[in-house]
Image (cartoon, rainbow, N blue to C red; front, side, top):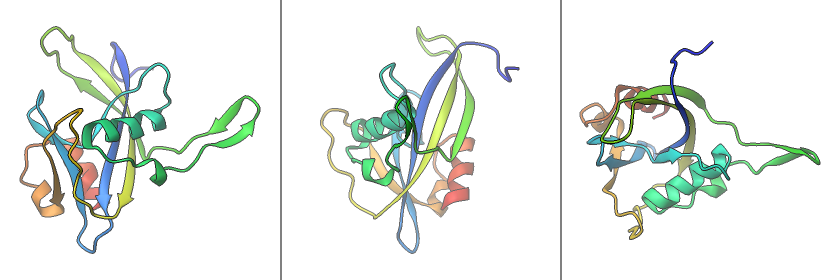
Length: 153
């Protein structure tokens, strides 16, 4: 039974949380939605959710977070166990321009990493910034983003 009937797109998102005593999260400003969000995006036909998550962080923020994911474990000649997301969530996405309303099935991964300045990323120049838990309460973001960050920071 579908909770939300309609077209579904598979996405992968990564919450990047610093391992400092007072943790911070690395977010990017989403120009289309005009809110701060964790990096993420659509899973390509040739990717699994883990590969998409790692690629999206590299493309959008310029960080390689592959080392923070568990390596696939072969279960037999035909399959592997993948790093599991912290959450799998379904979200409604409003129509925008030529894109009709649809739903995202999002694999949400949580990565704890040492604080570092986000590298300049000329391929996708996004506004990227670290935020403390207190700052998360005051910025423009989706409520589901704020809620999950409050759980993990």
